Image (tube, rainbow, N blue to C red):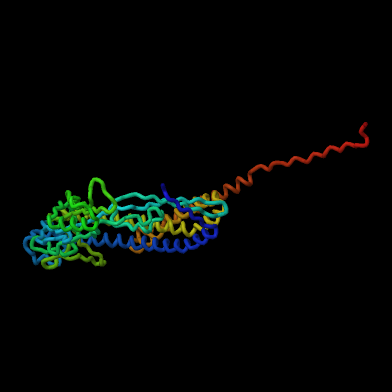
Length: 426
């Protein structure tokens, strides 16, 4: 059965929270404004850097010999990146020749889920009902059950058989023909593949004996179950119990790659454009120069739109928090507060859109003047249109009120005379 917790907030408490939210709203408004302005500059500078890099980029050619004439040049090259380094996970004595060895861990645990509902009360108060439910799931880190809200689940046995931290081992020496990759290129090699787990007998025996001692189970019970690229630690992989552990392994092997970078002797470094922005990138496989630059331009545009969206959201919620005091003041009657909330959302949305256009336009005036002027004109037209519509609506309401016919008031009828009681016959 779900566990519920009910809390109430008074009208005064809601107003206090709304006033505090005004400050948070201004912070969000400022943060969104800065993010939008910075993002436009970042986008323009990255575009210019890519164009500058592409304009001077040349093919490295044969990577099996160091070409002194290419030193200091921005180059594109494709070829085989290999290593002789042996990477090892000493915890389970797993080793192989690879560029990367990646270990990730999951734990089967009791997990708390919350669902919150709020109800406005006449008088301005608010009732919050929080429902807590619990389920057993695979999660990325052990869960501390002592913080659970439901007393019947608080402190439930949520221990784990073994704590295994996530970890990535990376080769230090990767050769690209006659050239050596710097760490910045090695880290970008991410063509992951499953690594089949094979445990040595002595490793299995070490862990099994420890589990048998700690949990006092029969020696015939097996805890270590490697299958494919997963090492399952528990009695039965088909029926997980709380505390079981699942360790997954992946590898990145030597292979063909393509790079954009600046030659520095027998290695590579970041190309730095005149505006200070730089480029050193790697993709798996054999990819042409133009295709790589096209991908970089596309990535730059995608990042720009993602950050714009985040900035506009910050500004929207900033305005919403600032105007939320109006909604809370009217929450003394819930239906009035709901109507006010719709209005606040509309106003915050319009202001956020107009504000964002203005900020982006100012940024473009700084970085791209022609586009900035066009965007400022669009923002001004939007504000003018909203103002015009507001005046027209007001004038329409006033005209309708003036044209409404005045209903004549009927004159009062004289009251009938009261009968003379004394003149009535007996």
